[in-house]
Image 1 (cartoon, rainbow, N blue to C red):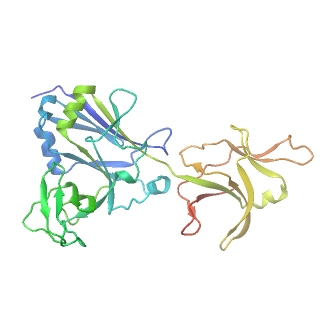
Image 2: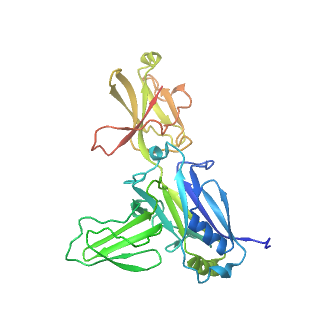
Image 3: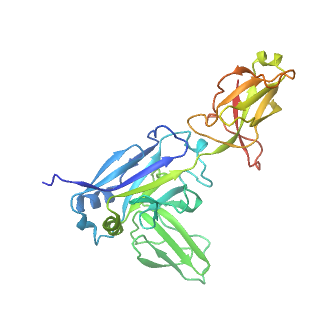
Amino acid sequence: MQNTFSIISTFQIKHEYFTQREPGIFQLTIPLNSKKTLNNLNLLIKSFNNGFHLLGGDISLLKDDWNPIHFHFSIQDPLFFNYTDLEDFKPGKSLVYLSNKVVYQLEKLGEMRLSEEEFVGKRSLVTVKQGNIQFNDLSISDIYTLTDESGNVQDVSAGGQFQNVSYEEGLYTLSGKDLTQQFYFFPERIFRSPDLVFTIYPADLYEQYQQNGSIHFLTQFKSRMTKWRYILTDPIYKKFQKLSIIDIKKKTIPFEEKEINLNGMGSFRCFESIESIILQDYNSGYFQLVEKPDSDPNNEKIILKALPRASPEMIIQEGLHQKDLYSHIFI
């Protein structure tokens, strides 16, 4: 029995929201066919929060193997889409698809990004099909082809559902005269599709390993930006006439005073950030509530030394077509 294994590659998911520690917001599962391929290639998986290490006993086994190995990741944090900037993602109907077939070399040797952009975006999203592959609204006069992950091509009957064809899990591309469409297929009908799929092609990994050694595959999600509103609901603040919010780190006043009407609660004094501020698990500014009397504006009186940060639990969009998002912070 072989006892010596070395790390061939590492896959890691990062999120801009977390600045101190990456909690386990993604859960890894491996489908049965991928487990069989891992065993055949003498590969082991050692998982960690939001990623895994791939260990191998004999790297040469990967050289001519083109069977894709799929890794499923499901989001565990119910607030994920509150603090994540990922337009057009629809859980259950789309997923983030990444693979080692197309990678982008970073400055550090052996570090590779899996998306063209710094953060996962719309280009990494594909639609999901489950149970059977069926196409509607295709032109009867046109010829279409369906290509699977391994490059196998089949002709497609326009608008047809294909019987007696065994489709396996994977990424498919439908191509026609004026059409190119990608989707990810799961044979199971009753199945909650993962939110992210990472596919390793062993032969490509072999070449990447030969050139760079152990590979660190990285992907990162972008955090939302919102306009922060500090809403003064405590009557004690009514006695202060010249209040301001300052950022003591930047020596600026990044908020402007307004009045806001909250349905069922009435109107309140409010300080709204002039620009949108990134949501992160620590306060990205050092905000203080101060009083600046007219008699001596340089003599600031600190009312609240440290204002709370915005929480992803409360994000407001005012109107269906409003671009700005708001975070309400009650003090």
